[in-house]
Image (tube, rainbow, N blue to C red; front, side):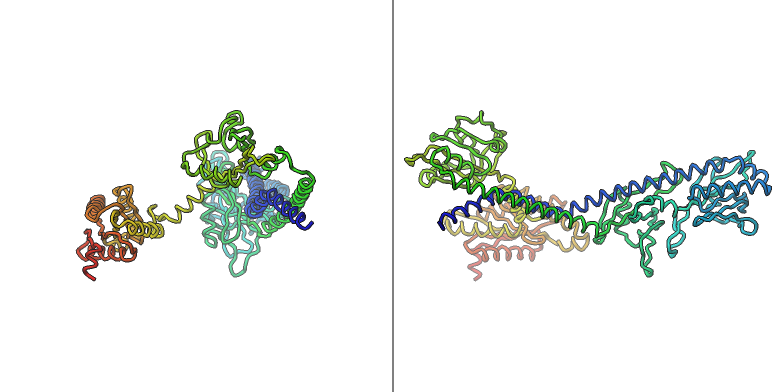
Length: 625
């Protein structure tokens, strides 16, 4: 009873693992992507918000701009300019009062004569409209907007302002003026000036029902024109370009987007108003993404994923339990039952062959991975997929294991229909009849091509020098020791040499031209060496400007000739402005001694004036000793 329970429980765990493996990977990936998705969705939300704010801002300014045309072309206004009687002026003031109250976005409407003196003025602020006259009318001849108005042509409406009135003002209060010259009867009579209440327009952006904070409005100098942020009294939030230079650089390089600065996320969009309003400067809408938004999204989605995960694994556990019960209640005596069990226990792609090893069945996953349909492979032997990467001994050992053990598993490289190579984990098992005679072979495999490519890529990265793309010190040590072992094993037949090369006066290059030039020099020398060496030679960068070359099957005299050819190639490549020095020795069985001899030979080259190749053989070293 205990043995039966243990067997059933083992089957349950196996089925649970097989069915739950892919969902587990899915949930692992989903949990890893939570932060990324949170940022993407928050970015989308804030982008919609900014686009709406942009639309509302442009619409409000357009409306105020169109209203200016109505005001400056009004007959009552023209009559008051021609004949500034008390009655005519009062009529204009009443009309302007009505306009200011009705539209809300004018903080001041004025008519200024050609000398800069205010003649008519209506102020509107905090819902209160007020007519100013007498001593309250001031001379604006020295104001920038008045001087700007003098440069305008007849019929032109200019826009002036959109800058902060002062960095120390709290809250920040920007100014924006619509200025239009008034010409009647062929003569310039003065200027109509409308102050736009940007605070009112700013408050209208989000609508009365929206409780979310409004985006900041910045000009292209980084000044904060409008903001609802609470700022520190000691460091007021006045200029993004000065206070957040990294963030500002990103804002200036893109028209819209989402960016992180010191762990804080921001969404932004540039609003180019010139397309709608002439002379209107471009502004930037900047929205701060609260960290609580991201955390809340991650928390909600994590909870949802957790519930889904437990629900799915409960379902998988139920399925696994049902399968185990079904498996225990059905005895598998026939070949068809054994065949079904083998297919079920196999991996994704399945091939079934008869006792003559002819294909009689494949599944859809096989077709997807190999490119062959069942009709194309039916009756053929699996050898049609052979890639040529394995020798006959490999297949002999495979068949020996199948005949003796009824099972074989290993890594195989096969060929797809399109001729490309596919690396597989292949599992083959035999199906026997009641007399223990093989009737079928069931092969299942998983495509691991991408994984193998990644392994090869990672192996190359760990063994290649990042700057020059030649072998690094780690790979050199492996090859060097292997070469020493080979020479030790066949001392009478193998002659190999080791050379160490160093770029002359490299420190001078770094000091004079900088490390970028030094790196470029190293790359050029490495490329030159690689081009000049034989295919059997091994080149590695073992230090800053130091290279090592293993020359297998090469006597010392030939190695010296090769090294001198390399020296001249580098010297000629750089018009005799750069040279290398080298030391060569024969490879013997102890790597440390070989390396020491080559290094001593290199030192001798340096002492001899550089641009020299020196030789120190093992025989000479013994004489010194």
